[in-house]
Length: 104
Image (tube, rainbow, N blue to C red):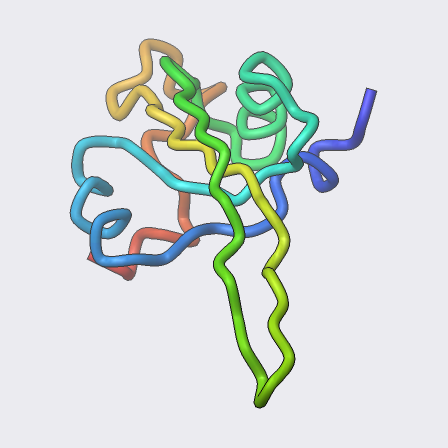
């Protein structure tokens, strides 16, 4: 099994991802081979929050051009993780992820 740092690669900061933060939904770029169970365990381990639901989607890399040369960015996977904002066990789980707290 992979380490949680290898599954959760980085947060995705867009207008839409910021708009859904108050509802307890956080967006991450994740490893292409990771499944929903692995993503949920990694988020719980890294951030200490209770995960309710994980939605994943495969994103295609966009075509790019530099002069006369054409190429394509790499495909990647995005996960929208819904956490419990009012956890029953407040000593064990947090109600939000601190990294995102100042963004909205």
